Image 1 (cartoon, rainbow, N blue to C red):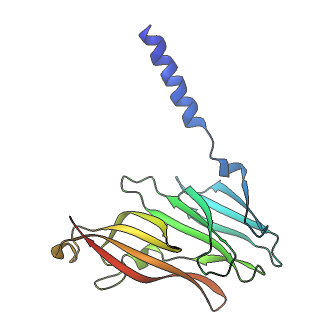
Image 2 (cartoon, helix red, strand yellow; image 1 turned 90 degrees about the horizontal axis):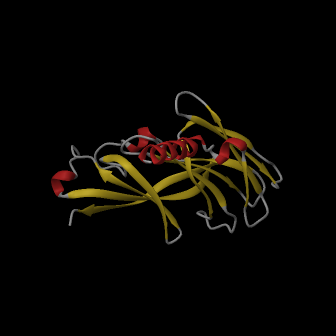
Image 3 (cartoon, helix red, strand yellow; image 1 turned 45 degrees about the vertical axis):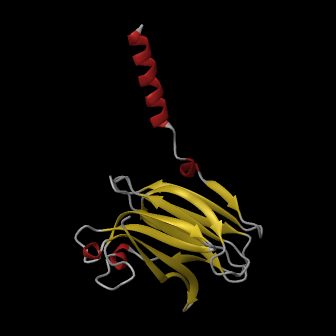
Length: 195
């Protein structure tokens, strides 16, 4: 009898592992203005994927690939630039023991042209002493707080911030247009001490 349960458990575990990622076949989402976004993943190197996003409903649509990303964790709409048009944000999460979350986005100006959003990359996050990302260490988490997108992260054990009792930090990002590109830029930082 125990063998039957073990075999049933193994079959269920195998079936769960065989479930495909819904983004492999493509998922279409629509924002409140009626713009649609087809999000699809395709395999890349190792455990990485390419995320393809195609838009419809803009005066100038977009077909864009975000290369070599981790698996999609969450997809949602938000209006970070307060122009009454939602941007699309895609959050990915690595499979590491201390997962790293990354963000990708699509925004438009007055619904005219959809363009990718440039977010701070890892090189920027490992910024030295006194910078917004001083002491950055995974895992990190993005949260929407009072209309702002904020990234929370642990402070590395070897950081000078640790000697002052600081163990975590929050950096809030703003979305703005710069030289025809959409950019998520850090503008507010807060450190938290161990309690």
